[in-house]
Image 1 (cartoon, one colour):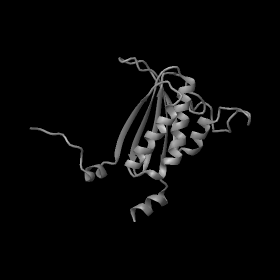
Image 2 (cartoon, one colour; image 1 turned 120 degrees about the vertical axis):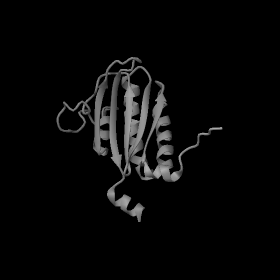
Image 3 (cartoon, helix red, strand yellow; image 1 turned 90 degrees about the horizontal axis):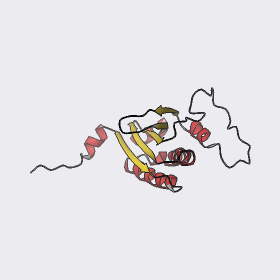
Length: 165
C-alpha cells in the first residue's frame, strides 16, 4: 500500500520556499479573513516578525481589490527563502492604479486631501514594502484576466542574524 505523508521538518528547512493561495469572494470581510490567514501562515513558517507589516500590506491590497473590482479576488503568500515574503493579490479589474503602474514616476505623497476617507492604501504599501509592482493578466483558456498587484518584504538582516545565533 502506498501512502503519502508530508515532508519531514528537515526537508522543509532545506527548501524554504512555499506558496499558499486563498480565494476570496467579493465581500467586505475579505480583508479580515486575509489577515487571519496571513498570521497563521507566517507563524507556521517562523516569520512572526513580519506579521505587523505583512498584515498592513495584505489588508490594503485586498481592500483595494474589493473596492475597485466587482468579482472575487485571490491572495497569494509566497515564502522566498532568507526570511522574505511576497504578497500578491489578483482581481478581475484590469486597471493597474498608480503608483503600481510604474508610469507614474517616482513615488510622491498620496494625492488626496488629509480629510479624505481613501486613496492612501497603495501608497502605504509602496512605503512599507521592500519591492512592489503590478502587471495585467490577459485572457487565457480558463477566462482569467484582470491584474496582479504584489509586494515583498523581509526580515531585517539584524533580526535574521539574531535568530540564527
